Image (cartoon, rainbow, N blue to C red):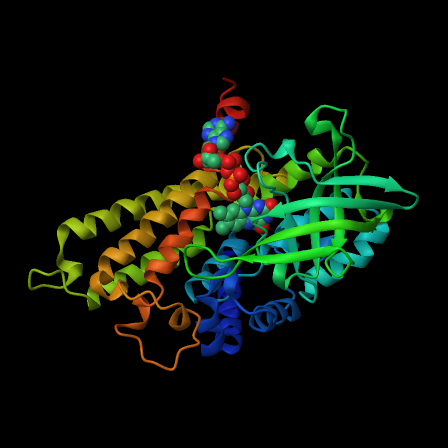
Length: 396
Ligand SMILES: Cc1cc2nc3c(=O)[nH]c(=O)nc-3n(C[C@H](O)[C@H](O)[C@H](O)COP(=O)(O)OP(=O)(O)OC[C@H]3O[C@@H](n4cnc5c(N)ncnc54)[C@H](O)[C@@H]3O)c2cc1C
């Protein structure tokens, strides 16, 4: 695409954002994973109707066919404008597994509803005692005629309480090596025997859940790929998940927010925070890391375009991306200082009639920083990513 075409595309993206990103959606976006389904669907639908919902999917399955540069323009513009996050569980996780390994029936049933956002998914991988050591998972699926009967428990299941379907790793062979006895099932959350219980996390919000399965009957036709080959599909999905966690555009938004906050806040020595050399040096340092991260992200996106898989470099992206984001969130708390002390979850959720004690940008500073700690844990902890790099990239 020529540079004039690119700038026309950029204008088109900005016009779309101006038209569809209403102030209430902007506000709802600050809840991240905690956004209501109605608000999340409104933004998803607008992007879908524009034909832009799946930049990373192949064109034949509904992808946009954009170049790498176009993808960056879109993701940066929406993130900088503060658009709601598009939930990753359908589009970035199970969707690619279904179009790569699923049956024609699974593709026809699920892909259109992932694309239009009418069906929400959640991820049933982790179990108590099986997080980093995921292959030790115990949730059992026993064949009974044309069904599997599923019993067991998942934990830390983000948005299970809002989801229609869960993609779950289950054990179908207890005698094989751990990795060899796992299958990948698509389970309707309304099936009798599926029960969801909430977990409130350190940010004061409810995104997380436990999901229990008691004699849940799942048609064998809901298994993706071959029986006992689920580990292969699970790893493919995890690489996509890790690449997404780097969330570079989100960190760029945090930097620009920090710039505005540093103009508005005092440094405690009679000047603006923006004039405080020590603080601004910290911001500059993290901006440099962010630029390096953008370059790495471009490499990973190029790998996806060529091979369909982000590969093991996704682990590097995940480590650095989560660290940059955590540092930026800590700097925001430092910048808003005492305004960060009230921790009012009603205010954070926009459900309080009382005014915020400080500026709006301080309301969720501590909550966001606390939840941000999770990005070095979910998707496989950063320690596990270092193990992946040591083995798969460095050959140690
Ligand atoms: C906010 C949040 C959302 C999540 N959402 C989901 C979801 O939607 N679906 C889902 O399935 N899961 C989800 N998870 C679970 C997540 O994937 C696990 O928490 C993660 O894989 C770590 O597993 P664990 O919690 O069992 O910790 P453990 O595996 O018990 O690890 C504990 C500590 O030991 C370290 N450790 C463990 N093994 C090694 C090793 N071999 N080498 C070095 N260090 C090691 C870890 O790095 C960690 O610091 C979520 C987690 C969080 C925090």
